[in-house]
Image 1 (spheres, rainbow, N blue to C red):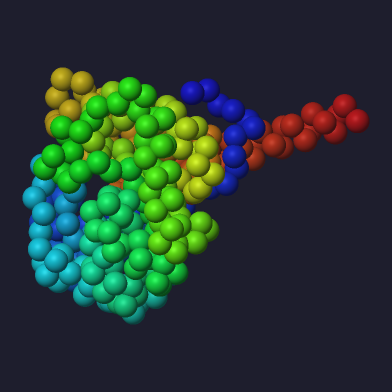
Image 2 (image 1 turned 90 degrees about the horizontal axis):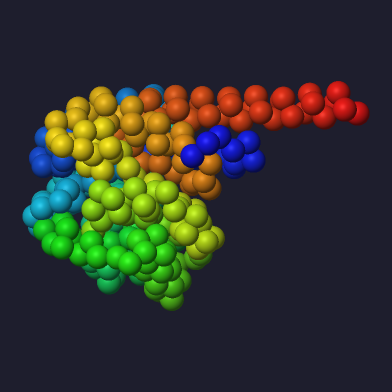
Length: 293
């Protein structure tokens, strides 16, 4: 993807990942106390995150579901503690459970990030409508223990867009305002490595929905696979973070609302560099125009 000087100039929001789980694929068991989670939230905000996305259930491939009680005991105290600090960032609850979303909003969350797009719990869309909060609807075909068996597409970008449109229609029918909906192509969910890259390359199909787009590629297996096709699991977080930042820079030529990442500072740096390039291009164009006049 070569540089396009006519690309959108809006900086995407940076959503910092905060998993309070023992088994998430990237940072499991690192922030599973309120104190450690709050400390990491502070670091994410200092690095430039505008939203903290807090999850209490791993959605890595093969992960088993946890009980509502377990999920809620992990996320609600953390959300409450972070909200009370008023760090200056919005709080997102990463959950597929409507009851957890309700409790999270009561504790201080103001965004719902549902990786199932409202399919895992039919009450989720009603919760978003009731509280008039932003809801992120991801493309999803099944839970982590079965999703790898559902990666069958004729045209992955077109089919993902069609299935996302169905979730948008369901949300609006449930009373969610269109201005409160963000869509996420669901990279890594029911898609193999090749399909993920095909989808990333054709985000224009998602743009046709006319809604804000969130991309969550951070540290995922398809990123690692591009770096080491034979042994993707051997690719370090540091290398994945650099690759994620590079992808973010390239995708700024799309109309992105936000990017969800583990390493906020590398992504913020990438966004700053692309923004400087945009400004330089604009300045060069203006100078040329002035000389011609």
